[in-house]
Image 1: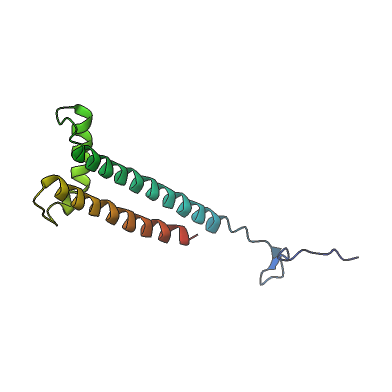
Image 2: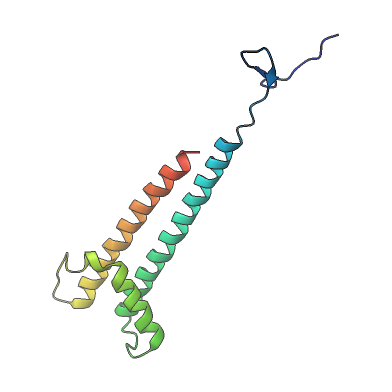
Length: 123
């Protein structure tokens, strides 16, 4: 009497004729870890972009610069967008800041998205 097997359920056979089944735990665990890492990258990039956009909004709306929250958000946004300061110059300083920091936010989104996609494709 032979038992019917479903597709893919046949055991593998080693050189000694013993059957074993590969668990693939390492590859599944590695893929799950890469997926988790991709989600963490997306989360961090999202937070950075949110801080930069909040900094832009606060500057454009002329928020009170003596307020602690406004100062902290602006300082964090300036730190993240620092390499992009001064790329474009306009007569209006607020517009220049918005364009340069906006460019920084877009670059963070693109590069972070590519990194996350690479990590998630390694599953």
